[in-house]
Image 1 (cartoon, each protein chain N blue to C red):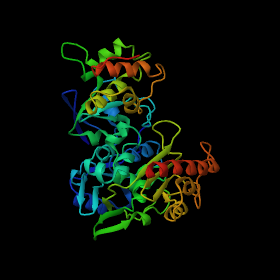
Image 2 (cartoon, chains in turn green, brown; image 1 turned 180 degrees about the vertical axis):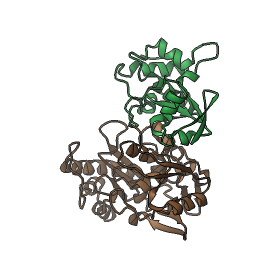
Image 3 (cartoon, rainbow over the protein chains, first blue to last red; image 1 turned 90 degrees about the horizontal axis):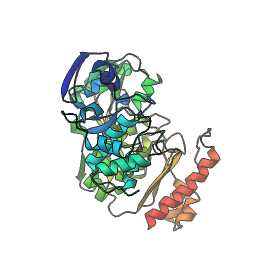
Image 4 (cartoon, chains in turn red, cyan; image 1 turned 30 degrees about the horizontal axis):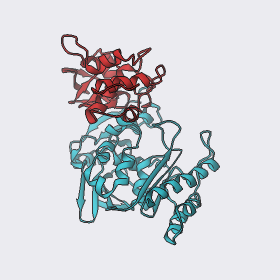
Length: 156
Length: 270
């Protein structure tokens, strides 16, 4: 079927198989490969993107279900002049990543979390990111990064 | 992993969804949020030939107070219910349980109707609606019928819904001011429950203690005759048939049911 999705502000239109997953549409059709496929079973959160502003796991949404909707990936966060989004800058400042594989999904899940809860506690950050697995950091610096991005003092 | 080939049909109204189901019969499967169905299709455990997408039907996405009852549109998403002001006041247990399903991403997509129609005994909302004495409203080509939750869960992943029927609404009585509790034991944060329990007033719904969600009848009877939470909780595993598998033995699950029910009843009595 013909699927048109506005990804990071640009409409992407393509004839795809009905069974195409949103994550494949983003990576292969739109050519935006920052969004990773990790577990491919709705567990790890690496493929998290915003669908109409809310975090979803794009390995578990059909491209057809996103037809006519808007998607934001981590490539769509930075300003046009390259200035990093506050979450990106905070992950960098707080060393909120090591290998970086989970980071695109972690940042998009954090963006959705902060949209609902602009000043979360550390516990609320941990609960809000329970759908995203990181095998490197132990999460501590990820929590620091989200707290910094929310404009709160990072209390280590 | 990629699902087997299917034909995708998006319904733009309840009537169109019903006519698509009638047209395609057994070959068709409804998809709402897809958070249970798509993983099954990717693992090729399900391979419907036609997917009828009802997720965009906002006409079934609501929570309304109607007299002494609360009407919940079947396509309300978990996160809708978690933040809903009517549920917060009149059915806080249901709002809480909706907010504990999976993770935030799953709650942004998954729907209450999808969870109930999927009828996984390890899922949270079926037990919560069973404990709430809910009534499920289904619409088919010959009209609407109401099915009590107690008659809805026939077996693992099995309900009385016909292939041409759509679950449209869930109705529960107001639970304003009733004590409630919810406990769930999982291996990891977002996993399905090894065992869970949803309590509202003196009703106790058990998650994953049989092939379907069930009521802890012996514990409820004990409560009705004045037993303490601990005394009633000790009876929570009576007449259950929990699965015995590597993540947890059936005896361990019975132990969990007793402990978790005691905790949930204690919270409800507080």
